[in-house]
Length: 210
Figure: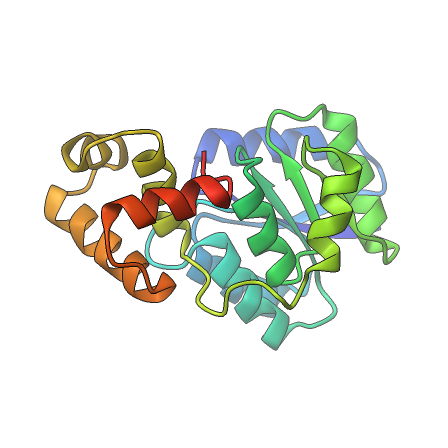
């Protein structure tokens, strides 16, 4: 029996995943979590075999950060990133934090079951909607990524900036203030050693933040 912990801040999505997994006799959902901190606590207390980890979860700890912490506490737990994002930046981040799997939320139910079995048996399972050759190159460059990896929120702001959104529009999209957007941009530029908005956009285009 494969013991699974489901992490997603949207209750309906989380419950839907639980209902889907109940169809498989060799999979048991042992717990649910709605944010990163709860995911870490549940991982330690429930000791699941596999964790389905949403990327964009609120309250300070995104899925990538929670994954890193769980690896420290429970190194044998397999973690699958479950997300709507198929941008290369997100996949790179998943590889960097050593996620065992990465699948999109719009995948068929069979893909989720296949991913759980794959990582449980020790394999890597990335079903990300990009060519396999490109995915292989991302794994080959593991360890050579930027030392200052952007947070999920910073990546979202980078992507929207590249797409031409103003600070006010980005604030509306992400339900934060324009001042917070500006602060995030300043942090991004400092991390990446950029000096202007033009350089920020150029970097974003070069690194597929679109």
